[in-house]
Figure (cartoon, rainbow, N blue to C red):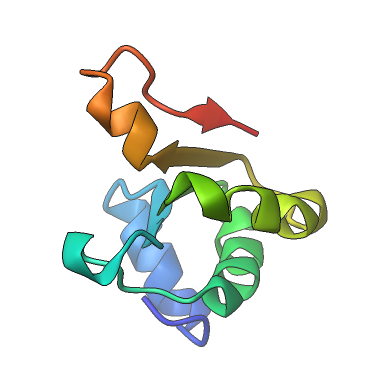
Length: 95
């Protein structure tokens, strides 16, 4: 999903039951598909539809997200390689 998605498209997705957006920031080998620059504008857009944001990232990237987390109005769930390797005991950190 791109930050310039139309409100009508977001409304349609919401009407179909979608309630969140996920960013993959891990390594390219694990399917990284987004840049940090994508997170804030899209999170602000989907917040008005009452969606949450989930971000999968490497543990060393989490601290870099603090400024973004403080500026966005939506709930953010961060999962990392570490939480995934613990067999599901730690699912994510809700910010």
